[in-house]
Amino acid sequence: MKIGYIQYNPRFGAVDENINRAAVFIRSVSADILVLPELSTTGYLITSLDEIEELAEEIPGGKTTEALAGLARERSCFIVAGLAERSGGNLYNSAVLVGPEGYIAHYRKLHLFYEEKRWFTPGDKEFSVHDLGIAKVGIMVCFDWYFPESMRILALKGAHLVCHPSSLVLPFCQDAMKIRCLENRVYAVTANRTGSEMRGGKRFDYTGMSQITAPGGEILHRAERDKDAAIVVDVDIKKAENKAVNRYNDLFADRRPEFYGLITKEYRF
Ligand code: ACM
Image (cartoon, rainbow, N blue to C red; front, side, top):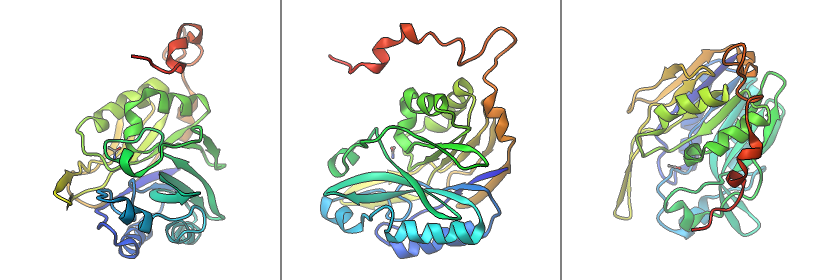
């Protein structure tokens, strides 16, 4: 099956323009599952609560989810994309999963990065895995990668593929994803954005280099830093079901959760 990403440079606040730009890329490839960046239709560098309140959308029902669902239907594929969500008076940094039949699910980022904590409420739902028939997929958003528990729990819940919308500014993630995939034996598609944003006296330079990583830690494709791209690779998704390292070791069967208790407890300084 074919998995891929769209790497591009959303313009802040230009939701219609960004959706149209993503649509051109989505229509340029043939894929089963496509991943778009974090906050893919609003842009990332928020400078006030008012502006993101204005731009956030309901999921399902909002403009971005509806547009992506239309594209998923037209292209017979599944799409995962980051967007700002408004729900019950809260704002979430979310990612939606849509398919040919429309909205399927959405995830609310659990580990908020830097000033995201000023605008968004941290996610309030567990990591979940969705059986699409062709693959079981989990979703995490950008900085979630820094917490190994994110991909571990998705893998333990049966994910073959982790879809990872991102707006990365630190230089570590792409290399770290080799280990995240290796230690969990899953595929991952990290869809990062390109460009820089300069707003409110701040500047973020995004690292591009979107990446498709295999269960053995191999990089199947890594984009350039600055070039927008739509890239799809063919994978044998069932490889993610094999957790064996050798005839004696299995990454899941060999776990010793009875000795990992502290990992599920709140850390106290
Ligand atoms: C990030 O979570 N956008 C770094």
